[in-house]
Image (tube, rainbow, N blue to C red; front, side, top):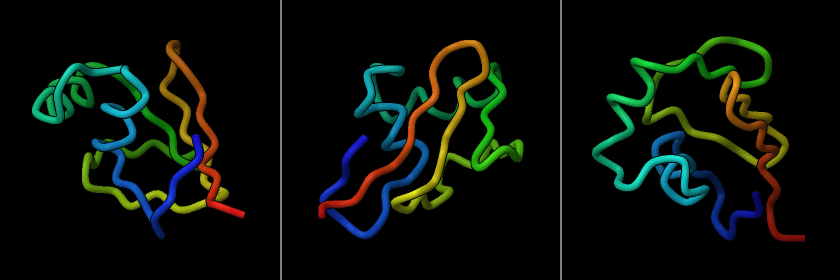
Length: 69
């Protein structure tokens, strides 16, 4: 996923990737699914993700954050 800002939060990523319908669904989604950020479990919807970070939603999708070049 390419971002045009310094960082994106985990909740924003889930919404922009179409994994959840609204930002409010992030809390529920993260309770029900394991998410790894750079190979470490993390369930914080406000977690800041920067270019180069790898987000794995176990059993759903893997996303690598890319900045504008």
